[in-house]
Length: 274
Image 1 (spheres, one colour):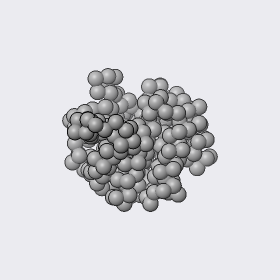
Image 2 (cartoon, rainbow, N blue to C red; image 1 turned 90 degrees about the vertical axis):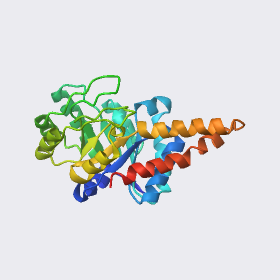
Image 3 (cartoon, rainbow, N blue to C red; image 1 turned 120 degrees about the horizontal axis):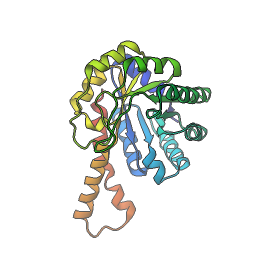
């Protein structure tokens, strides 16, 4: 079994100047492809179940699926709850054996975000589980606008919560289909100067690959969440399969046909963070 906590894979990344991919999963085929990609590259991988995935499939099923994949993997696999919205949701994930939870208190006041995140960190650490928090607000393409992370608030947040990683808002945006994000390097440098925890970029698909690699190598950003970029690969491969094989009707055959293209894309993403 190669289940690992977030801290176990991010601390070496922080020390040695690389980042680990947090890959957003929507089903069995993509989760399996991501583990295959990580094994081919010889690197850890973080399998993430976000709110959309949890609305589609119950959390206990995600836990069983992630852990089954980890059992057969030759590289460390982190089972991660992404954007947990409450203490109860994070507690459920911990009870199910997730090795990492992310509590998103970014819409709360600073004091309330700290208080709730600290309570979840204490619960997680007592169970040997890691916890990621967010300070500032990472917006959404064609949706809610971002609120940049204040370095002073980030320092207080990291110190008072004891989180294992901090997600920051420095120009990154969720659900971008174009790789056009501009990172605020000055804001990042100020955050780095005032904190010593691994930093996380949500909305990593919106960053050009060369920028992701530069940040992975030269900053405290140790985790990039990648979802949209991979979903686009999945959708493209699925459309091609249905177009070129109009006679194919079996669900397993159709979905299995997307795994190789998705594995190759995930390998590309993973390589770009080293």
